Length: 210
Image (cartoon, rainbow, N blue to C red; front, side):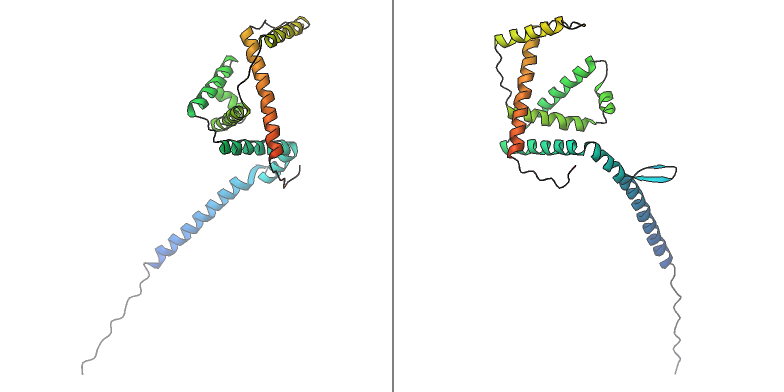
C-alpha cells in the first residue's frame, strides 16, 4: 500500500501582527483623546506645574455672582416659555433691525460691535440671544404706549431745571427726543411689572442656595 504523506501546514503569523498593531494604535488614540478631553473639560490652567481645575474656578464665580446669574437664566427660561405659550415669535427682519440699531449706536461712540463684544466676552450668538429675549418680553409686556403733550412739557421742564443746577449743562432736548425718553421709561416700567408677574406665577425650585 502506498503511504499517504501529510503535508505540514506552515504557521500563519502574518495576519496577527498587523491586527495587534492596529488594536494597540486604536487604544493609544482613545487614551490620547480621553486625556485631551479630560484636560479641556476639567483643567482650566496650570501654574508652575500645579493644575487648576475648572471646578475651583466655577466655585469662585458662583460665590461672586451665582445667584444673579442663576436668576437671569431662570428669567430667560420663563420669558421663552411664555412666548411659546402665546405663540409669539421674532422674525429675522426684526432681529436684524434691532442689531443694526445697536451697531449704529456703538459705532457713534467710536468703537465697533465686534470690539465691544470681545471686551465683554460675548459672541454674536450671545448678542442674538439677548436681543431675542428683549424683543420677546417687549412684545408681551405691550409696546403700545401713549404719551401726552403735558408729559412732554413736564419732562422738558425737569431736564432744564437739572441742567441749570449742573456745572456741566447738557444740550436742550427736542420734543421728539423727550417723547422717546418718556416712551422708554414707560416701557421699562411695563416690562418690570410683566417680569415680576411672570416670576410670581412660576413654580421655581432652587436646588442650590447661594
